[in-house]
Length: 111
Image 1 (cartoon, one colour):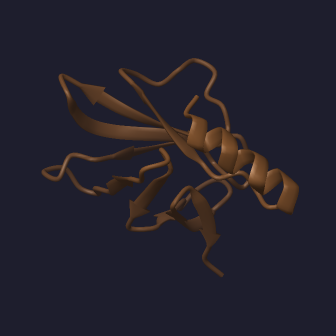
Image 2 (image 1 turned 90 degrees about the horizontal axis):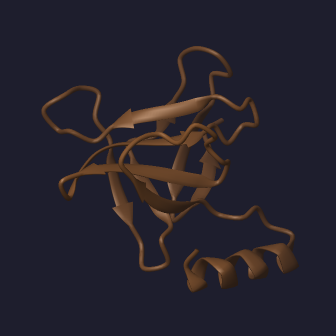
């Protein structure tokens, strides 16, 4: 775990704020995905997808495409402290129907 994430986590805990997502690079989805971690799938250096547990609490795994030639496609930006930002927003059409932005590791719900 990155030292900046640990410090940010402590600051959030003291302030009573939610802990931001941070990124872990993997080759495939882990069997037991952990909430608050965005798994960036990378093969041969090129990112092709990502996955994370839905932040609404439903426990569902969300997997998104990062390959621009396949639609729909998202873009991920990694910040200096390993927190991610996603574009466009994530809108689940089934299940919990969550709709949110992920900006600098923080979930911003769409109302």
